[in-house]
Image 1 (cartoon, one colour):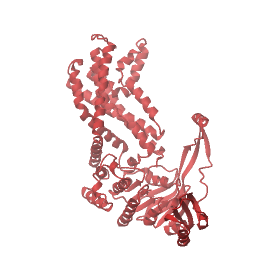
Image 2: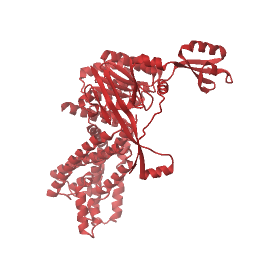
Image 3: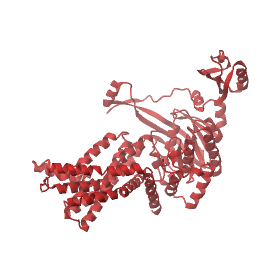
Image 4: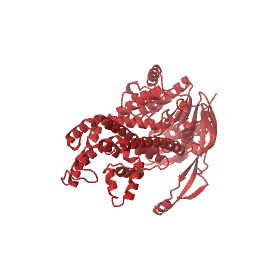
Length: 281
Length: 336
């Protein structure tokens, strides 16, 4: 157990070292990711036409900008750029062999590599995050209580785990289909809408406002899917949209998704290996 | 004691058969043809512990597929194999601690980091005691003459230096079985020699069981007593390397570079001209007549350069087994 922890710690350290190799490129890429928030502030300003008291689908202009800021935090945990595509590349060109011949668990290896990736990102991005939230503090109503912050932190952990496990599951499809770029694209599109990245999920429900039965059906469907945990859920906690038993139920369902996706990853890996042909020399 | 025991091992791939042309590509969207490729077709052999065996054959003969089966990368279609008592494709952690696979065309070191960082990671992954790790690293870097390079990012190393680092990474945990797939491919002569010398010394010292594939006759001759020759997925020869070398070396190749302006005539009377690209030409000549023919050539022509080479082992093996490579007679059509 201790030896496994030590090996994982070394994987983490080595990955951090690797991430820091191209410092300038990494710092630039990290900082550039803050630009969209500026666009969001102006976009929602235009949508609400300067009327700060107007509410659309339960969100005022201030709520909406606060939501966009909080989604940015959630996405910083759940987004896994290059994970599925990298796994597909490893399968296609044969570099996956290092995970299969060494006494390591490939999923754990990739997990700790991703933790390292995120840690370095947070170190670089913390300053800009603090600055952006300070400048935009007027969009938030009040400081959240400790319980809300605790739920938010847990939700961010769920966002990371669900983000990692869904993307790695897609990456494992490459054991069956060598080229998965279209699948990755479809997943990203679905994720963009159904995670609440584009607009809050309450807004999507607004599309079905004429048909309450359909609206309820869509709401229940979205509640059962894992996507909302990757953006909407943490933001909704901080905005007070989810409280009490509703919040607890979401936390349980999110945790169940982590276990389900972990099991699915294990099964896909075991079955995928039986299909694996070790092409590429 | 038997380290590697392979019995009737088969691996058949079902591969998409792409016909030529746009219309065939469109048809392939609706109806696909597959064919069975018997990469390994029932091979059986045993390797004693501490033995170093060459695994030879032309491209596509099934050498690398066999190594992939023995390293647990792929599952066989049928047959059995054990390495050190383990069934490789069960991929037991205990087995993975006791063997290493080095592929000349694949890296396992971290590209952007110094090799020493990869070595330290291996130390943790393979749970090597710190004192053992330091001693082995010192020994291996010394033997392979890369001690000063371990702190340099892998991407900045030459191909030969990288391969030596790969070997160190593969041997730090003291495997009992080493599977080497073309370890000297693409290396210059000096690096090839260093890798050969190292493998010879280290294998003998550690009584390491090694299965080596290589297209370089010099690798094979320098390192192995025994050769298993595989073609079309089947073993064609398993025995002394000396027999193989005698069989394969009935001919040698004389390479000439003429110094004149025009191609001299009558070259064919000295041997079989198989590459005639003036001012260069290559002749296949009987091995036991090389001195006489060489002397006659030097007398007859004005030459700028001349060289005598062994025929590439792959070429000789391909000639030895001229039977047409049959992919499979079983072509099945499956609608998708």
